[in-house]
Amino acid sequence: MSGYGTDAEGSYDYGGMGDTFSDKSIRLGFIRKVYSILCAQLVVTMVIVGVFTLEEVKLYSRQHMEMFWIALVISLVALISLACCPDVRRKTPHNFIFLGMFTLAEGFLLGCVTATYDANEVLMAVGVTAAVVLALTIFAFQTKIDLQLWVEFY
Image 1 (spheres, one colour):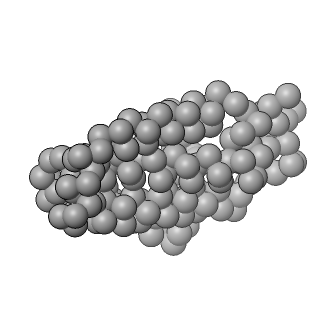
Image 2: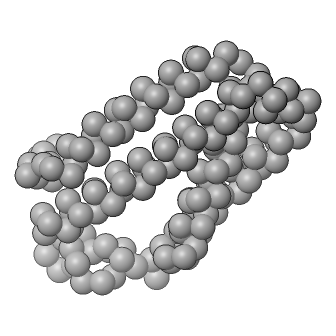
């Protein structure tokens, strides 16, 4: 049993708690939580990438490429666990642990890439992504617009 489904009226039941996405305040709260988590992930990634711009860390990272491969394996394990195991992604401590592992591993991967390539290019890409997500987060936190009507229309 996944915990997700529809009720008799076709409303989407999130997590089997009786709360439905047909209620605007629940949808907006969910969107705010998602964007908050995404912003936190981007901040952590930017901090890790920033550490990898230091010359000592760059040199160490270039000499120890196994760090890249270990981070890649951890990233894939966390991502596959979240994607394929409903109990992992829907239970509160587990989903945050695996999401945190994924975020740290991806940040570490980007850090290794930063150490290998031009840091300005990588930091610019991370910064632009963070700016777009921050703008969308601010919009999601303050909006009174219900976009669900557009989704149902299409």
